[in-house]
Amino acid sequence: MTRYQRERGFLASKDCYRVFLIDEQPVFRLGLRHVIESDPAFRVVGEAADATTTIANMHRHGPPDLAIVDVSLPCGSGIELIKRLRNHYPSVYFLVISMHLEHLYAERALRAGAVGYLRKTSPAEDILAAVTKAVRGEIALSDLTTTNLLRSAFSGERQVSSRYGNLSDRELEVFELLGRGMKTRAIAEALVISPRTVERHQAGIKQKLGIAHMTELRRIAAIWITELQAH
Image (cartoon, rainbow, N blue to C red; front, top):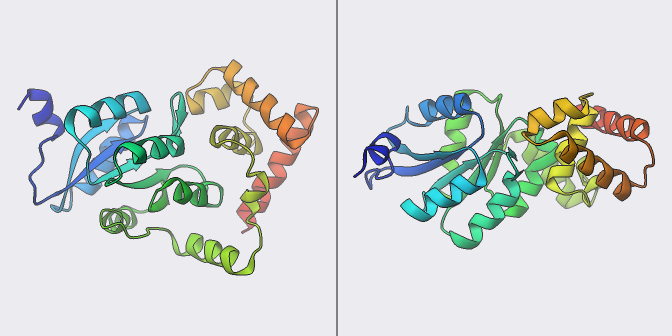
């Protein structure tokens, strides 16, 4: 066993569930590791800040039992990463923990193959409870998100977020942050992409929604966020 493997715990004992963390923020990964490893049933066996490192580490050291993924990752979407990893590692369960509203991404995450979705602001006990469910393949959602998804499924009504279902995952992230009043450079910093890339996504959103001007796009995005927060 190499020193790196010892430090990262890649060769966890077989009586532990192996958990892999995928989030660009080292401080959040550290806090999440602390929460997870407070239960001896779990062992964090690796970490990554982006898709490339994740794929390389899993290829080198083997798949974990559970991968915890953020929606926003450098150079890509965590939801798209889940789709890719599921093709290579069908035995791995995925839990999304993100800053984004559940209304926006929970359904997309489940469709991609995740078994749960939580906000980063969730209490530690809720996160640990979700991890406990997720490693067994059980659905791990907040009560509100579960209620909203069931209501949508049985009533046939469209979720507020589904009005923009033709937007890509990254476009939806940009659209959300526009609705929160963030400017192009701030969005670029939040998503760890270039301002030019943000502008390209904004152009794509305008084209898909039939909007000509940024002022109108910001207005519609702000209204949308207000509707989401009212649910």
